[in-house]
Length: 392
Image (cartoon, helix red, strand yellow):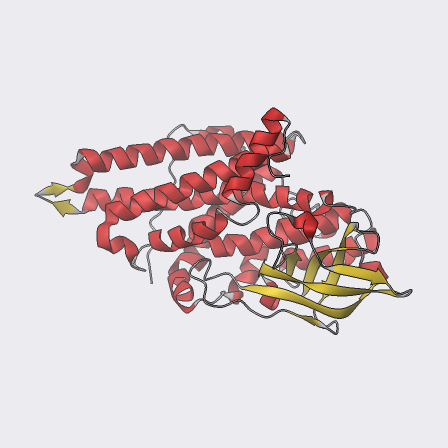
């Protein structure tokens, strides 16, 4: 089993900006990752299998809906804590963080924000512990960056809704107990429905042959005349704003999570460069290796300050969707560049499962695309500063 020697980089003493509670939450997640994730994750990545036994522990460390109030079974933490937990989980593996992100921001968040009181009490406590697991159905075979063009639809049949359509690239789909599904009603308005496993006509075929996010279970959602009880409609969700608000929460967590992957790659590369000897001295003594490492820690430090400020704004209810998009885009791009440089420092060893770097690199190729592609997030910033939508 791999030994986890991770040492947290903090060049600008960002820890001083965190409360003691924040550090306790982060450190608990970090120790859990070191104990439960790192020793087994390479094997599961090689097998392309999600380690289901981790679900209970994720619930215990508050990784499922950290921001959900205690009255609904959540830990009642703030958004800074949520970000720090996502950072630690993705430091372990993007697939594990994806599982927690989906459960938190794309399943629990919409029920909490848009659901009825009965829905909150029925689902949230069990989702918080992992007794129930969920997924989020927005992306379709023909509609990714343009979710408003979705073709999934439902009609009112009097005592129930009849749902038809398909979703794809859905994290957690193969084992999810419930799905938050976005579809259009007869008036063409986008609404959210809670679809439960076992409903006739609802299936979740698994997606195979992935080179990325191999420890995350990915699948499709197929709806063939699925009868959905009317009480499963999210009453407060109307229009595209509903799913996009959920994606803001997920993208916020990703901005923190990608930072964790970058930290892990940097820490691994630094330790390797200090230990690996060539030409009679550690490779860390060569200028080109120092350039790589110095640029890595610089970009990590900038990203740390970016998400800390974003977390502060989100706690105050001031963070905009465009600000979240900027952080998601910047930090994932930063992380991907860092893991590529770290792989160079490790040479051939960097492609092996003895180190986490190549796994992070493959994972981040998905992270830079999902929850809004790299290019779309750039255009969101462009729209925000010019007032002109380039994607319409």
